Image (cartoon, rainbow, N blue to C red):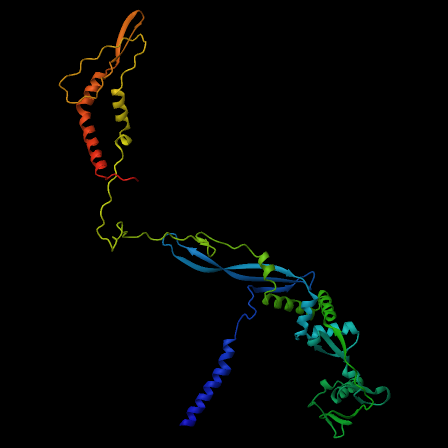
Length: 408
C-alpha cells in the first residue's frame, strides 16, 4: 500500500513540475502586438514591398444619462500601410531558416554555380563549398562515360541517366540499394530486377574548404528576386512583414494611418464620460451636536449699538429743533410761532422754528403759501416721540453703568 502511495505522489510531482509549467508559459500572442493582421500581400508593382492590413479594438464607454450606468464595449479599428523591403530585416528572417528555395536561388545567382551551403547564424552568413556531386568522392564508368558523385546512390543514378536509363521510371523496380564493402572502397548497387553495378571510391578526392557569403548580400539578392516575381522570394517578403507586425515594430505606423475612432451618442473614451451628481444627503442634520464638555453654554451677552448709530436721523432732527433759527435778510416774512403750552411735561430747551411762508405775485395777483408748518411737527415730537427716546436712553444708561456693554 505504501508503495502505491509513493508512486502516486511521484507521478503527481512529475505532472506538476513538467506539465503545469508548460501551460503557465503559454501565450497566444507572445510578442504582444497591438495589431492583428487581416491580410499581407505583395504590392503588384514593386513586389518586394508588402501591403499590410491590420486591425485592433479600442474600448468605448456607453453612458446611460437616465440611470447614470456605464458599460464598456470594444469597437474594431482598421489600418493599412505599405512596408518596404529592408535588407537587415530580410537577412534576419533568412537566418531563422525555412527559406531554402529562396536562399539556394540567391546563392546560385551570386556564385553562378551549384554548391552545398548551410546557414551560419552565429556569424550572420551562409557558408558553402563545392557541391558533393562535383566532389568526385565516388565514380562509375570508364573514360568519357565516367561520372562522379558524392554517394554511391547518386553516382549510380547519374551514370544510368547518362546512359539514357531513368532509374526512377524503371518498370517493376523494387528500389535502389547500395551496399559498401568493409574496406569502404567499393559499393555494390542494384535495382531489383533491372540493373546493378559496382561503384568505386575516388581515393584522389580532396574535400573542398568552406567559403562564406555575408547574409546581407544574400538578402539583397532575395529582394531582387522578389521584384522579379519569384514566388519563394516574394514569400520571404510577406513573412518578414508578418514577423515585424507580430513583434510590434509596425504599431506606430499603423497607429498613424488608422481610421478615426468612432463614438456614437452617449459613447465616450474611457475617462471622458460624464459623472452623475452624487445623491444629496437624505436627512441632513442642521443642528450640530452640542459640545459634550459644555452641554449648556451661557448665552453670549447682547451688544447694543449706540442710539445715534441706528437713529441718526432722529438725533440730527432733535439737534436741529434745539438750535436757534438763523436770521437772514429775506423778503419772506416769517410769522412768530405760537406760544408753547405752559403745562407741558417735556421741553427741549428751545423753540420750534416759525412756519416758512412764501409771498409773491403771479400775473398781477398776490399769493401766499406756507411751505413748512413746523408747529405741527413739534407737537407730534413732543407728544409721541419723547417717551421712546426717554426709554431708549434709560436702557442704554443702565447697560453702560452696569458694565454690560463690551467692545467688539
